[in-house]
Amino acid sequence: MTALALALAGTAWMSAAPADAAPHAHVAAADTVHATNAAAPATEAAAAGATTPFSSYEGESGTLGGGATKVSLTAAPTTQYSSAALEASGHAYAHLSGAGQSVQWTNNTGKPISYINVRASIPDSASGGGITATLNLYVNGTFRQTLNLNSKQTWIYEGAAYNSSDNQKPADGRPRVFFDESHTFVTGTPIPAGSTFQLKKDSANSAAFYDIDVIDVENPPAPLAQPAGSISITSCGAVASTAPTNGSAAGGSVDSRAAIQNCINQAQSQKKILWIPQGTFYVKGTSGLTATGITIAGAGMWYSTIYRDVPLPNNVGLAALFSVTSCTVQNFHIDANAISRNYLLGGDGGAMDTTGTNWVTSGMWAQHTMSGIWASGTGGKVQNSRFTDTWADGINLNNQSLSGGKSQVGNSLTATNNFIRGAGDDSLAINSTAYQINGSGTRIDFPPMTNATVTNNTAIAPWGGKGVGIFGGSGHVVSGNYVSDTSRFIGLAAGRFGTNGSDLTSATVKNNVIVRSGGNAYNQTQPTVHIGNASDGQQVGTVDKVTATGNTIANSLYDAVGFSTSKNTLLQNNTITSPGRNGIVVAPPNYPAPSGSATITGNTLTGLASGRSAFVSNSSGFTATVTNNSWQTVAP
Image 1 (tube, helix red, strand yellow):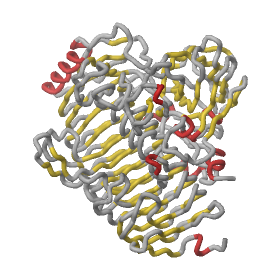
Image 2 (tube, one colour; image 1 turned 135 degrees about the vertical axis):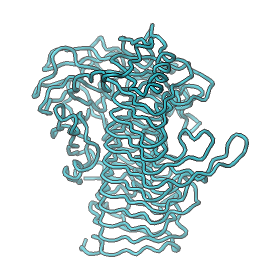
Image 3 (cartoon, one colour; image 1 turned 90 degrees about the vertical axis):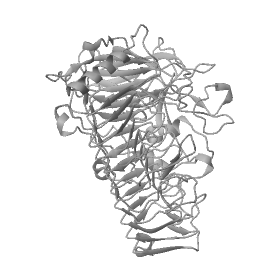
Image 4 (cartoon, helix red, strand yellow; image 1 turned 45 degrees about the vertical axis):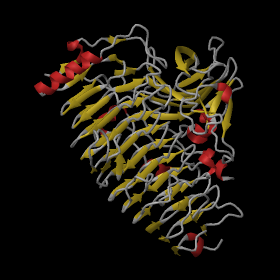
């Protein structure tokens, strides 16, 4: 089988709940996949990534009915442009285009299903701007409810302006950003264990097609109760809307921004918790919310929502919805009406910018915002959260958030047990800035980041960036993460970001699983894992002492591992399976390595295609010590 065929064969990605959600945990069964691939054992896949309270069923792994078809990526891209299959998780999806066509799965979680989240694509309108449509849910063959879908926050056209983030003119062609996610509670009795559930296009479902990428299923806990002594935003006049959103704000919704900020101010002065009850509360206009030193808590990500409804276009550089310092923010959902990454035209400024000391972000779910969380400071942690359909990074740990034109730090920051899918830039990034030039031309220097920890996160199908980026600083640990299905860029990169980024002087990359990754953005045929100073086209800076051990790198679209200029790298005891091109390459195409050094030892490579090489060096100035690897110790 080819590498792509192996990738699509699939094994189960296991999913269970964290300890505090154990009563509602689900374990994905064999027909559920966040597939690693046939060559990466399920035990390796299970050990990496986030532990989540939901299970994911891939569209292409369901039972197709009525003439529905499976669409898969059959070869690595030969152009720099995107496609729906390239942006899909598993690089495949189920296609429903006629009345009666369906995709069906069996609830093998062992638990009832009371909540579903569908990642799907429906067509754009003829002139751009999207449409709304419905799709029907059946349980055990009986109609259960109608689901609302839309394409208002998808379909960007690159046309002649490659890498466009805001062009909504279908006539320009070359579309990207196909999939969006919609969630709802199941109407009536939860879907019992062992029952079938089906998405079906009936005659009343008006979209020309429905591309079903994945459906997440779960049984959420009951809403959390308001903490004693806390201040509810409704006490300040915030008004909840019960009408569902579908790519834009619900009609008749009330602007609660002033009321919420008033309650924040009270909570700060009285040292109390700010409470966000059940319902959807709107923040309209171009101003966000600010808080310092308090806890902001909701009834749960399934129940409490703050929805940012900004004017489009807004012609204002927006701050994030929440700008918080030394706060704990937990257990609610953030959504927005953003229709592109361009914050002056169709963007919303992000979900949350946070800094300070010992801040915590936990149990959050952000969608359709610029970034999910943009975070600096000391000792902060983002955990047990979901970031889906973001226009930029899912999680960005940095040393510049809320700097206010002053030097800022990014020390001992942690991202753990988070789920990120469909990011418009990097799913997860450690982003150390060396300096910035402010509006008056003054240079502001930032101390390099230290000791960031990125562990046991899941990063799936980023359509605009990398799975994990380690850009500058020292002492970072990136371990136990699951990365899959990048569309355009590297799966995991260790280097320096841009000309003003900090040098990377040490990092440990261990026990990650990275599959079906790499990309052909800018026609660069990028590797799955890259170590060196040119990860974003900048041939500058120092990348030193990166240790990569125990990682599984499978079904790469192009080369599995690439080195550009870097020194003292240790690539040891990694498992490489079925690369689309070569195994390990010094100076792969577009990533020069005029100097540097690496020790490459104890690595295992299988599934190499005919005519390809396990190890290639294209640089006489780069010293690679290559010993005791499988292609050296085992006869072909």
